[in-house]
Length: 147
Image (cartoon, rainbow, N blue to C red):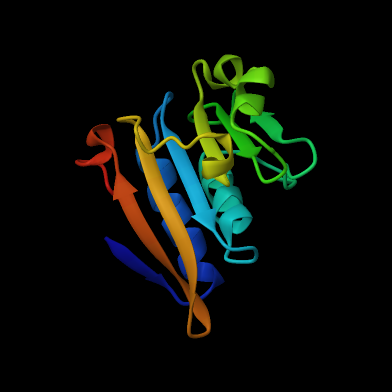
């Protein structure tokens, strides 16, 4: 499925649709070139889940957790851009972070990927004209929940 995202409002609306369907244990795997909007979409999802305040890019911290009681689903926002090998995700204790939370993963391929998981919603963002386009793939658990 391809979704056109011509402006920031459409990106935010897409994040709201994803957040409305997100469950603990899910993975939203965000791929795409630098500047395509992965962090922008992650922020939209986190705000739609109920996070208030800033959502820093986890490029340097790699993992940021969001478990505030105001959120509908606890979430982990990870940016794997700086990983040199997939095993580093395990060394970070990623499975512990994911327990009972949804994972929003930027650069998932650097962590070995998540598309094989039934609860993975894979989104590749690409430049298109003045906006973006999202190419969406879904694991079995997402097929009836696609945004």
